[in-house]
Length: 582
Image (spheres, rainbow, N blue to C red):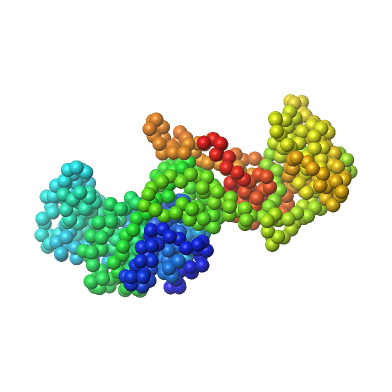
């Protein structure tokens, strides 16, 4: 990738004043740093979700705002759970959100550096090879109130540790037989410092390095040194890593890449720049949003058990799913801005996310007419075969969107819910003998209701007031209700998918009543209907968004939509339909 810094113009919002940005400003003004370098370090073991969007926007956003750079680094230290499919999706997600990385890196790029660093710790008497099993390690670790006990292998000599570690590297031992552990303090109040593992044996083929390595570094070790190798100035993590920060600093300080250039030789041999520095880890609150689950394990179960239609199901909180639902990069960035950056964990209401999308699409989405649940209306006073063209604005608030022609004919489709034979109190739409305005076409009166043998309404007959047509003297006659329509002769049949929240409760993770998140799945989260859209909507490109007037915001499905077989997903309703339910 280019070494050009991320353009600050990517974020056009006013200057942000959260605590992380203040730390960055102070570091720059004090001369501690002369340039900012961040990174986004996902593990490619699943698809990114909305929580990752906050980290992406923060890391790339800060780099852009302060004229710095941000790397994309894949934490590929656990090859058994990683897949190139996820790697490709993550890159796609980052670019979709509007960001470009300075350099694409992998933890596996530094496997040789990590190994040399581990040998250095052994030589310095700060790491040892341990033969305890995973269960025994847990027994020796102690509890939050009781100190741990030293491993019986903690006092092996440097020579024995080097020999065993090199034999681990050579693949002599089976999985789980030995680990390399840091020698810190088994009595530490922070359990993460009780001689944590730095390396484990795993005879697993790696997507980048093949079978070259039978041992792999642990996350805390690789993450800290990866930041140091790349010269990251500010390592931004979520709050669950706060207790890991002492270990992060221990790894960085005791390996000391800035003082031991020889450890970086493998990096130089790969043609990567030598950028080692001492990074600072800063923690911020995770993005938690109600009416959904964020656990990769639970999301994967939803997919594998067929409870959703894949990782990009529009009901999923994955970035791929949100994109298919019709969420836009600008709406996602607006949402992250509104959530803000703090040290306090909190639950964000789903309506904040939906509100950001409504606000974005209100100004960005052209208007179209579509009928979701059609009922035929025949204008009896127009002649058979009547056709005309009406001109509509593409956006009521922005003339630059231009205009479009919409066909109008004797037979129309209107929304079934816009007619009531026995209207409830306050109903202002079409009723027997009543009048309503057809959007942009005139005022119609309902004269006849036609039913089938089962008593179901199948057609309405009406009279269109010729004096109320556009440009006529009666066009401004006051009528309480206005409804939309499409010409039955010209409308294009469309599959319309009405999506809603995936869960019925705000906290589907709550298992206090013996239930699991599966028990709270919303049976109304997807409803597929056959409707009709005006011709100008049918020819939309995949991922093009519209406001279907009076109905909601919809997007042409990125996978299934075609001009002759349009498929639209409801992105969000015009108003918050869940507020009253709360």
